[in-house]
Length: 99
Image (cartoon, rainbow, N blue to C red; front, top):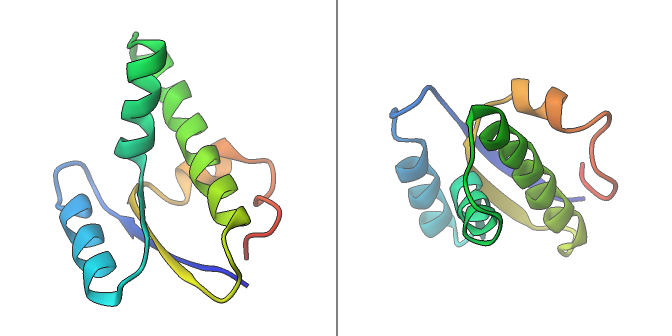
């Protein structure tokens, strides 16, 4: 079983700062929406708001697909989450191997 600490909050509330602090203090890997999304932007380019949201959904899928392949028994920190909204939008069901 894998566990994830999801850092949630309104825009500009310090989610990234808190996620980094938790990750560092506990020695847990950190996966952030911004890190994945910026890589997509660098490769695919930027666009309008709808495109940005699409890349955000894809970024969440990439994060949880990656966690699904990580070793069992570990905990991961996921920063910049907006649960439960993006969970419901990004997946029809939780990714295989996560939970």
